[in-house]
Every structure is written in C-alpha cells, then in structure tokens.
Image (tube, rainbow, N blue to C red; front, side, top):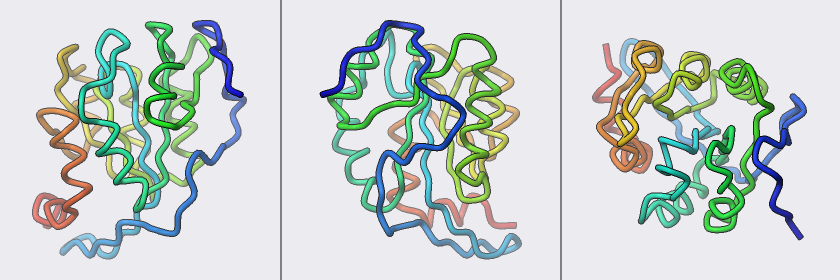
Length: 180
C-alpha cells in the first residue's frame, strides 16, 4: 500500500527506479541526424501535467497509451502537495525531488536513464537542465507559462502538453520537425 508522503518529502536517492517496463520504443531515422531509439519519457508534473496540483482532463488515457511504447517517469517537487492523488489517477509513482537543487536532480535523473534515449517534457525553470540532457527536450507553454531557460534548452516547443504527447503518438511528425 502506498502512503501519501508529506509535501517536500524526498523520495529519490539518486538511483534510477523503473516505473514501467516495456519492450517498446520509438525508433526514428531522421535525415541529417541518423537513427534514434527513444525508450524513456520523463515528465515534469506541476505546470506540465497539472496546474495548481490538478491533473489536466484527458491525460490519463493518453499517458496510458504511451506506456506501451515508452517507459513513463514523472518527476516533481510536489509543490502543491497533491502528487499522491496524481500518482493514483495515473497508476504511476512519481519521483519526488529533495528540496533544493531541483533542476540538477531532474537533469541527473534523465542522465541516469541514459539521456540519449530520453524524451523530457517541461516548462519551468527547474526543467531546463532536464530538457537539455534528454535527446529530445520538449518545452510546452502551459497556463503557468514557459520559462525562457526551458525554452532555450528544448529541441522542440509545443503549445501544450496534449500537442507534445501527440508528437509521440505520431512520431513521423518528429521526423518532419527535426530533419536537416
């Protein structure tokens, strides 16, 4: 039984934890770049999947369908103290970051997965290093905004989380965007 940790409780000790296992991946050949195999999707939570601690409607179905192709990871500082509810809805346990240096912790988590095989999606200042570390960093504009550091660290910018996740459901769109 999972218990609801207190807000600010650090549950990541710097080691990688697999949240989903699958044999799927997104395998792309991008002209001018070559063959890319993406296995992990790392998602910021607050501002990206949720606003004010409330998950956007429709995301559970979309994330569940992507779990057939990618290992899904969520990372959060649990700003609003509602991550337990989001974990329950998504049937996934987020990595809760220790207070302080959240940007470095997110980057290190992506690095521990092998950044060259990761997609990361975020919009806040503490997402910038994670977006830069992942092979495919996607910055989104959210109701909370889009931090300029995240914007500059991303390879692609999308108008919202739904559009960003649709890229992964239709990966040829990535080829069209990233070809050189």
